[in-house]
Image 1 (cartoon, rainbow, N blue to C red):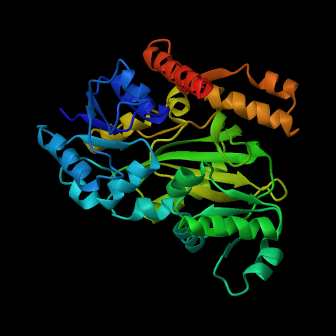
Image 2: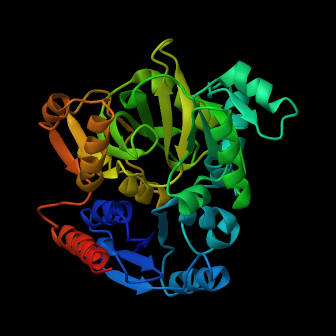
Image 3: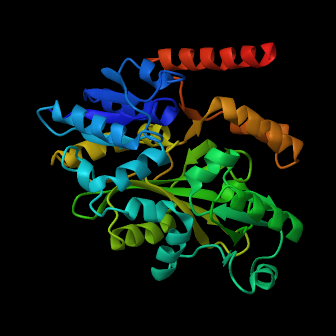
Length: 392
């Protein structure tokens, strides 16, 4: 009776949500503001695809359309954001949308608070969770503190990641000296994006871990597992492109008390980095929506979109922890090839190391033998873009 509404199908996260729900026979509706590049909407598991106003430029019209869609249903649909901007939009309008949709979060503003790096750092510090040393750019002793507390190289990070990534197509600025640091801060200021400076926790990309979890309506973590990145793109400071499910109990020991204490609800993913010198785990960020690794989590035995669905309609699934190594790895083939190229060029990986890593059980980002059309459509999109570039 309760349908699922997925926001955004122009990236494989939306596709993975649709598949996870469709395999459980859940009626699924996808909303996009354009038909361009919406390869996720080609899934055989999708029941309806609706074009709606642009949520970035027509916020009120988009909100009204969401309400209209929900009003046409006999039961409240469950709402799923597939990207950070969608999660921010839901959070901004949470109290209104909860009248028409089933949404796990109870506290308006909390999703945004943990997504924004500056407020997340404060939350973590208040709850005794380690975060990398940080210096605010308006600190009166800014340069001295950067040199003494952080050193070089260091990174300039945004408080609002979606806006920064949209503008610069990267997650951070990497700075090797004070000149690069000052230039990076000016670039951010020119775009009116707030930033801060942070220490780089030592360790290769395989020192990056995730704690993926679900907090139910009563505020308890009921399902979780952990993963370890092996490669990311852009390399060193990018998104997962080759990641294994790997059980690390210490991450849950840190993450569970933290998310329960702050009143978090629904699915979430905490990203940690392990200091190669001390072995301590530092909180890097929190994703409040379904993540890149969703198919890996599904293959490992945790269907998080369906877990949320059952929780929202008061038909809870039994708690489950994947407390062993399943052997599965997530792979986003297109960007992993680019990452491999850059790792080898920079001398961070050898061809032999890459070759040995490839023979694992895969959880592909897009390809599915039982649902191949999205992958074919995605390939067509890439070919079309390449041809247009050649013509230009």
